[in-house]
Length: 165
Image (cartoon, rainbow, N blue to C red):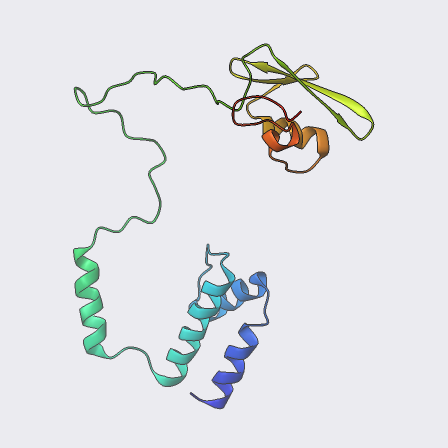
């Protein structure tokens, strides 16, 4: 590898993502949608080396074109889901077993946190705290503490729904 190319490749590793994206425009003549820093460094290093030392051989280019023409390439997922196939799709509600760590709906969990008593009511399909309904106990504890907690640990629940003595 040429000494200048080696220095430029080393400089790529010190660049930020916006700088790498700008370098991509300079080397490829088009913007990139990628924000993956490591991927951009590799792609730009390859481009710089191929410009300095020559790209792929004609045989390699023709083989790549041959392989590419056989592939049906999709760059992004379809925006809308495909409609269900008639006669093959079954739509039904699946019964969800209640979590054994939780007491039955209507039970109230209490805990002292930072000098105040916190109470959460267990609902059939969520948790009620201060008039708001949350889908998970962890979401409730995040509101209470301001940081992520495992809700079962926060309220000290055992696998059978009891609290530690």
